[in-house]
Image (tube, rainbow, N blue to C red; front, side, top):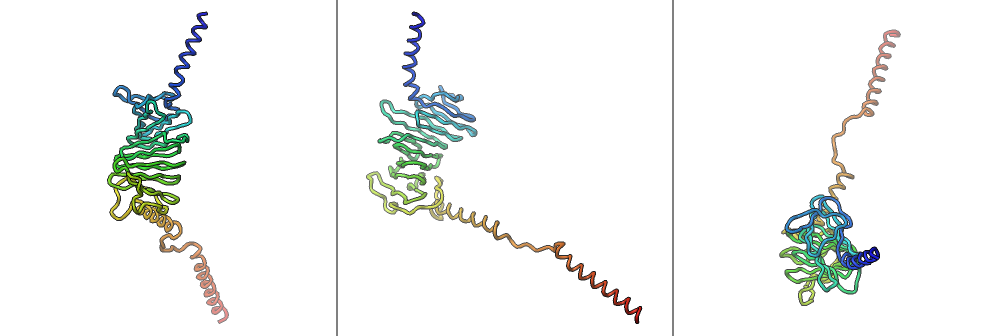
Length: 277
């Protein structure tokens, strides 16, 4: 009887714990140094450990960690710091990214339910696969699947980034989108397209979140630099610089044969003259 009661009590505890675990983000893959902030001190995070809501987590220079909840994953690259917030009473998750590289794979739903928020912008999705890079100067959003709504938190300007496109946001600059296909318009807070941004042609290169060069747009400078590098490689491979040609053994051999033959013929002629002269 006592054993039966203990088993029932254990099952009840498991039944209460499983829903809580299902709502937690678990560190399923971990490499290098990964830490969490507990009571004001950074302590190591172990594989299989659940991260409580709003707890800061960081990876060091050699660290990487992947968190999983159901079919959704959050992958942190090296030198990255975040905290994950799940809103109470709502099916909505916010990843607050202070710096680094965060790659997210989110299951598709009918409503927006996942957001990556940085100092400069917010990326909101219904379900997609995208990567956010952030630093002290700005950041980028790189879309691998689905659509990502990006909003500049200072100007409230927004756009929607598609597969194969990258959005760049930085202080004092308008949102820039690079990549393949027709580029999206940038909208003001009232939802009106900003002149000169609607339906742009695809732009080559990768955006940079740093200050814009005075000579032109960052993407144009980067594209020009890429072309210059490729031309330099082409010249080095297919058009080597001309060098003075040194005589090889194959060049000297015919000359030596001619001189030897001349000496032999000259000697025979002198001998013939002495004998028959």
